[in-house]
Amino acid sequence: MNALFRSSAWLAALIVAVAALLYFQRLDTVKAPIWDETYYLTSTARYHEGRAQFASHPPLGMMLIAAGDMASGRNTQADWKRIGAEEAIAAEAMPAGFDYVGPRLAPALFGAIAAGLFALIMLELTASTWAAALLSLLFLADTAVLVQIRAAQLDAFQLAFVLGAILAALRAVKRRGWLATFAFGACLVAAALVRANAAMLGIMAPFLLWPPAKAQDLPELAKRIAAGAGGGLAAAALALAAYIALTPLAPDPATPAGQADLAFISPAHARAIETGEWGPAAIAGVAQGIQARMRDDLATITESDAHGSHPSDWLLGSGMILFRSDRSSGTMHAIGLIPNLVVWLVSLFGVITSLLPSRLMDNRTRTMLLLAWGANMGALQYLDGLRVLYLYHYFIPLMLGHAMAAMEWKRMGLPRRGALVVAAAVLAFAAALWPFALGEVTPGWLCGTAIPGCAG
Image (tube, rainbow, N blue to C red; front, side, top):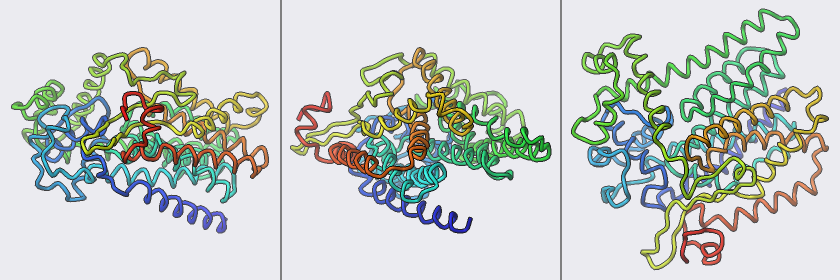
């Protein structure tokens, strides 16, 4: 046990260090909003002002972006009122001298944490340090994950919490005690408070309760139920408390963004802001406003656009997005999302092999992962009929597919030769797309062939 703990600690530290080198370098290469940063920078501005606000997603991820910028101190003199006046802001409207590193710091930090958690999941599934280190390339070398983590977007936060929930579930299935179940509940709710689709991971919960239920160990079963529920409630309570602390002021009625937010302020919430007295009705009003804004967004958002993807596309890593391109310097700088196709095919391999009856027989862990994958894909298939979805919405099933691929490799005896060939292909694909993922000078061949809309 001590040896396993030491291996886990060293592996996680190594992968987090490598991830930090990838994610923290030159975060300000793109000195303009990247994709959904156009919304999250204005949200950050309103958090700096202390204004209550609502968005198309729950508030945890946006609060973390703002907290990272506040902690960095890089934009203390920014004109936040001007930035936060609209719900979205164009690059041309951003104040001169704005430091884009500030709002991108927290995603980079959580991305590094997510990489370490991914490595620990691989170690849990393979019981091999070298295999887990090699499998960590599936996270570190995925250019789709890389570009999202290096921008002030929500994916790094949701990935970290999702991977924490998966790791906790894997440990709870195998071990006694309440701590892993508590962590599962806390990470699951935190992930859903970044993007609501993570709630589909709740389908894993019965598998955590099955070992004590099968053994008719009622005290252990009760302990796990209480721990899981307690973890979820703790995460929700902390997120709501943070929101209340960060937003002591009402939305600004003199701005378009403030006028939009005022439509979702409940009377109890408004009274609490005015008097400073918070009770259950006011807290419930905050939750109601958050949900109402999300429902409104789902009803009004476009059902498709040129960058959208469908679940059938995601299985093969299709759905490239050109976030920004700029040739004002005389050379083409483009940044966008292209997944590492080899990485995504490995995930698909994990799913396909898990569909074989022989793989599921008497293997509750693999069944749990496959059901979680199916539940998430089912939710995304449902949402695909209501609104436009993009490639990064597939990240949760992607991670579950990697976990199943690790189990299949372990079942095969962890052969090295084929794994090294796949690893070489993963690295080659990553190297080819590296400039595009980092927003550096884009090679002409890449701009002209792989990236539609990027004129070399």
